[in-house]
Every structure is written in C-alpha cells, then in structure tokens.
Length: 231
Picture (cartoon, rainbow, N blue to C red):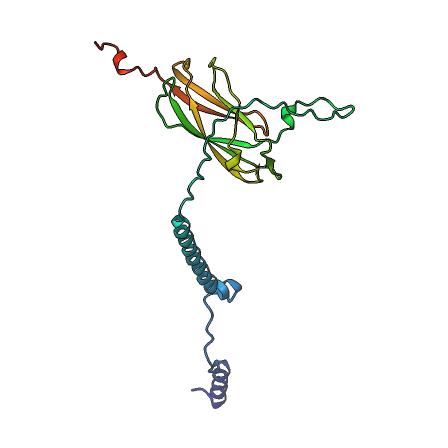
C-alpha cells in the first residue's frame, strides 16, 4: 500500500501532463495564395469575354452579309470615232541626261477588262467587251486632248485604226482613285484564224497601259443557201 506522499506526487504529475482544454485548430486544405484568391473571378471573366466575342462575331457576320453588293458602273457608250494620232511634243532635253522614250513620260493607269462570254466568235461577227481605267496616281490624268487607243486581233493583217475615247461622257480627266469603264465594239477580222486568239487593247496617247482579251475564233458562219450538202 502506497504511502500518502507517493499518492500525492502521482496526482500532481497527472495534472501537470494533462493538456488544457481549448478550441481546436483547423488546418486549411490549400495555402491561401494569389491563385486561390483570384482564380474564380478570372475564370468568370474569361467566360464573359468568350461570350462577348462570339456575339460580336455573329453580329458582324449578319450585318456584313446583309449589305448588298454594289452594282458595277454602267460602261460609257462606245463612239468609234477614228482619228489620226497626234505626234507627242518633244520635251526640252536636259544637258548630260540620257534620252528617254516619249512613251515613258506618260502616266500609267491600271487597265482591266471584262471577259467575253464563253463561246466561239466567227469572222465578221461583232462583239462587245468592257475596258476599265483606274488612276492609282496622286494626280489627275487629263483627257484634253482626248486620248487615242487602238484594238486589234493579234496576228491579223487588217489595218489598225486609232480611235478616240468617249471623252464627252467621261469628263475632262481621270481623277486620283477614280475608275471609268468604256464599252468597246469590235468586229472580228475576216482573216481571223480559227482557234484561240487574243484582242489587244492599247492606248496611243494620254497614258500608258494595255489589256489582252482572250477570244476563241470559230469557223465562219455560212448563209443558209451555202450550207454544205444543201440542194
């Protein structure tokens, strides 16, 4: 049997080793960093931006596709007036400068054409095509005097005629950034060889530029009384 001193000592030790009661400390599952703090707001912001961009793209596509395509300008009527080419004025030579061809002194324009309808063109047949002149320069190209041009079938021996543009309808100049379309009327030469050919359109004064229009030449159309095998 323990003595009273030993019993008092053990009770004192138990009281000393006993953990005092208090609130439990809860440890967080993940550290409190910037990613945890701003992750959810950034995710929400990203979803909102994606929705806004998608909606904006739909609106642009809708309104952009609903706009009507502008109709091409009406070509200026062909006049077919022939004229003798005017000899260009010779510039005053600069001492020590190399001679420059007079044609290189003329302004250059962009020359485009509307392709002919597919099919064969017979000798003697009249066809139409459109020539469009565009001034990409920063200064106007005067149409006074009215520029001359010519058009002919490459390889044909028929004489080539210089003609005047319809300057009365076109105006006095081709302004910077302006485009003018001209209707052209061409009669296929009688000596046109059958097969693939080309009509060359080129200016003779006023500006530089040219266009080559492909054409398919077929056999001549015979009158009904000359049809092979008739009679």
